[in-house]
Length: 393
Image (tube, rainbow, N blue to C red):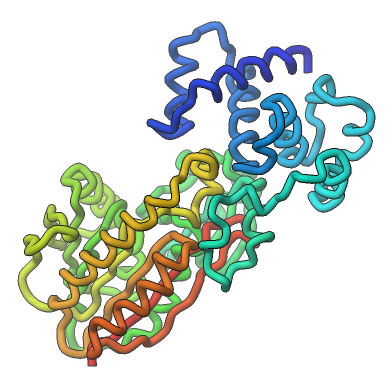
C-alpha cells in the first residue's frame, strides 16, 4: 500500500483529537467532511486504522501510539492487505488468519501485553462470562443479523441469494451477514425483515415462557421502547395484542411510529415519559406483560462501538443501576395479576444484571423469577445480553 505511513500518521492525529464527545463514526465523518483532500480509499483505510486501535481497548497502554497501531492492525486483519510497509519480516512471517498464533507472537515481543486489558473493569463482568474469550472477541467486527418476519422466509432468502450476498443461516428466522453489506437495497426493512442482533432475537426464548389467555389480546407495555425492535418481536411472537410504548424521548417515539407503519402495525398507544423520576406519568390500566429493556452501559455491544472500550468510566455503572432501580419501581405497580415483567439489558456487568435481579426479588416478594439467562453472542459475532422474566404471584 503506497500511502500506508501517511494513513498511519493521519489516524494518529485523528485519534489524538478524538475525545468521545460523539461516536467515532460521527467524528470521522465530520473530520473527513472538513478535510476534502481525502479520497474514498483514503477515508476507508484511515477509518480502518482508527477502529483497529479502538479494538485493543486498554491493552498495551504503556506502549507508544505507533506500536499500538501496529499491534491492533496485526490482530484485527486476517490478511496483510497491503499494510506490509509498516512491518518488518518477523511480523509478516507471523501473520496468519488464526488469532492464537498472533497472540503468541506478541507475547514474545511484548510480555506485558495482556488481552484481558482490552475490556475495561473485566473484574466487574459476570462470572458467567469467560473474561479472556469475551475480551478477545472485541478484535472481531460483529455481523449484521436479520430477523425474518412471519411468512417472509422464502422470499427473503431468494432476494438475498439473487443479489449474491453472502449470508449464514443461524435459524429459520435469523440470518447473519457481513457488516459491510448494504442490505436495505435488497430486502424491505421492517416489512419483511427486522435488523436485530441475534441475542436480541433470542428474547423470544423468554417470551415462550409467558402463559397467555388465548381468548383475549395480551396487554403489552414496552416501557423503554427505543427503536421498538422488541415490541415488534413480541407482536410477531404473540400475534394481535394491545400495545403501549413509551420512552423518555419524543423524537424516538416519532421515529417508532414511522417504523411501526412500515412493519404494518397500526394500532398502539404511545407516551413520552421519564420513568426514572418520582411519580412519572404512566399509561392507564394494568398490563399482562411489561418489557423493560432498561438504559444500561451497553457493555455487551461494544464490539460495534469499540471506542467505548477505552472511554467508559466505572462510575457510570452506578448511574445506570440507579436508573434501573427507579424504572423498575415505577412500572411494577402497572402489572396485572399474574402479569409478567421482562427485564433486560445489553450489559455484561453483574451490577446491572444479577444484582438487579436480586434487588427485584428482595424488594418485591410477590414477584417470582420464571427464568433468566445471559444471551451470549460474542462466540457468534453477535452482542451479549441479559434477560430475566418475573411473574407476579
